[in-house]
Image (cartoon, rainbow, N blue to C red; front, side, top):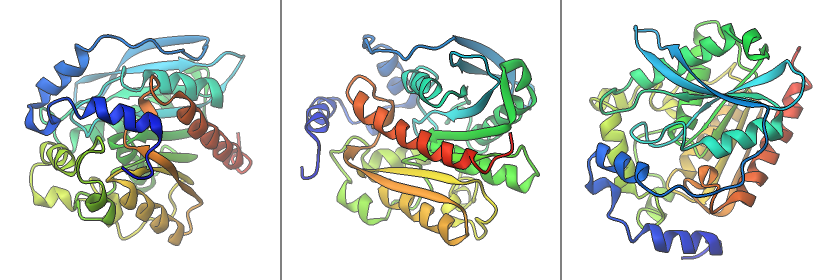
Length: 314
């Protein structure tokens, strides 16, 4: 396996001993990860961490986890959407990374436990994600945060949801988003880029597994062409928030993430995009294996947000 870091090689050797996730049912995969023994990781210090239930807009409630950094505030906001192909993942998946984001960027992070497919297919996860953004905006004062400075971000499917809520907020006159942070985002469901062929098997997120996720998320082929599923297909990407787009070198999603960054740039959106060398999909929330690389990515995010902040009226 060329271009893989030593940590990635060791991780993949262990990961590839498991049964392929796409051969299991969604609940089996969730149970498998939930039943794994907890891994001790060093957690970034914060003033508080709190779980709350918030309205999802259709009479349902979803959970959010609020991470407040040390200091006086009010702090800028960061609404975070976890990965997992819209099918697996939860607040725990992104917990350590969200703690570090709150600590390093000095933002109140609101991590969103949107409802999952196939029980809740598209557009429910999108609607939950937008409802959480609206809630964070409307309750900023009680969160010791600033409604005038909100970033959305997430990894993988969460990166997709971040891109999508940025479009929805633009199309619905708010809430205003200062920046979007897209970490190896899903931007299309065609599964046919060069990186899909290059890393189709054996790199953690197999092509067949991504198809498994996509098939559970959408109902039909028309959904696959919906711009709120596949933002890369949108004709108009103008007037969107500045975007930080990071991809992993050895990831099936690499090329579509970089293609989305290029489309944004061509639409006169401020963009910083780069590829993390030698890394695979999923590294950003794997604090046990990749703590230093996660810290490096968050340092880049912080740099980008500081630059964006220079042009934001607080």
